[in-house]
Image (cartoon, rainbow, N blue to C red):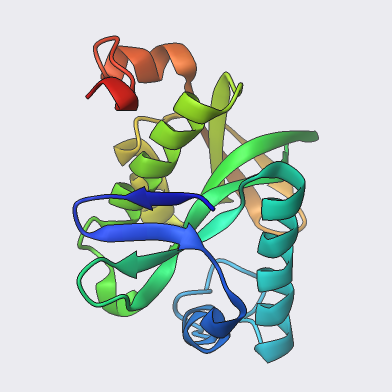
Length: 182
């Protein structure tokens, strides 16, 4: 099982018992305003099942983001294989409970996922994509060292914005040191 640590968070695989806490996040209209609609209980179960399948099939997926000190689940962050501009690409996604917005927790989690991916996977480029109107997600992508690469029209978002960081850019951010060297 993969477990990542940041100064304030632990990212760990979801377990079925996370359903209620995840439902509180994914059913919130404000948190999910850039999605077609908030999730109901069955949708949250599909979200969990999708993550469980990712762990099994790829060794990664979205991980539960929990506070180190309390174990409280406050969101998710991880890597999923997503259709971006007609190609399946490794995407860093993140969702944080709105009670904890604007505290840098999404960026903190996304950086840990980025570092893990470039240290433990063959991916040469990592992506984040979001509804073009989602300025908070764009800011998180930029804080993760990603650069804007394009926008395109799609049915789901109207306009989708795509950000990316390459392995070479990540290495330059770390002055040539990998996460394991720091």
